[in-house]
Image (cartoon, rainbow, N blue to C red; front, side, top):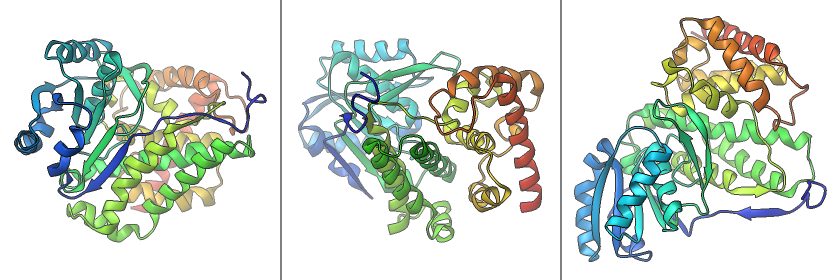
Length: 375
C-alpha cells in the first residue's frame, strides 16, 4: 500500500483503556487492575519498589489479588523479555504490572506481548512516554539501542501517581519535558511535506498542545518541579509527558514521519560514555543537531534555546559525556545518522555522512557559544 493509496487514512491507533493521574492514585491501583485478572507478576526497579511495594501489597490484598514481585535491573533486551515472560508463565500470571521508569515499563510491555497478556503500567518517574507507548525500545546488554519491538497493544491501564512522580529527582521531569517537546519539533515540520495527511495533522495538533502546556507559565512550574510540589501546572506537565506524548506516538498513518533527534539518540547509545545520561538528555543534543540540519536562523535559536538552558539540558557534546576521541565518535555518528534521516522528509536536502558529521560539530559550536552568552 502506498502513501497515495490511503494518504488520509489512519491505519491504526493503539490506545489504553484508561489513563488516570492524580496524587495518591496508586491506592486505587487494585480496583483498576483486577478488571484484567487476578494473578499478577509485578516487575519493578529496586528504587521504584522501595517506594511502592508496601502500598501495592496493601491495595492488592484489599482487592483479593494474588501477586509476586520481580526486581528488574539492566536494559530492555530480548533475553530480559523472555525471562519475565517465562516467569509470568511459571506462576500462571494473567496480568503483568510494570512499576518504574522506561526500562522497566518497556520490558514489561514486551514480556506481556510475548504472552498476549494485558499489561498495566505504574510509572514512578516522568522522563519519557514509555508508560503509554505500544513500542518497546530494544537494547543490548551494554546499553546500545539495537531496534524496536512494536507490541500489539499499549498498556491496558496507566496509573500515574503524581505525588510519587514529582517526588523523584527533578532531573527526570526536565528530561521528560525535552523528550515531549521533541514530539513537536520532530512531527510538525513534516506538515510542509504532507500538509493533507489527516493523521499527521492530528499528531501535530496534539504535539502542539503538549508544547504549549510545557512552555506556558514555565518559570513558576519549574520552581514547583524542583520543590517536588503537585500543583495544577505540574500535574499538567506530567500529563503532557505521558498522556499527550504517548498519544502522538499512538497514531500511525500510512506513512512514517520522523526527525533527527531520536535518530541521534538511537546511534549515540553506542558510545559508552553517554550511557549515564537520560534518554531526554541525549535527545536534547539531538534536537540541536536537527535545528542545524533544518538551517535555523539565529533568531530561532535565540527564541528556543533559553528553554533548554533553564532545564539544564545538554547543548554540547561534553554535556553528554563525549569528551575524548571526539573526531572519531562524531564521524561514527555521522555515518550512522545519515542513513537514519530518510524519514525526516522536511529536511532541506539529503545529507551525506560527511555533512552530518559537520552538522554535529556545528551543533556543538552553537551550543557552546549560546551557553557562554546565556550564563
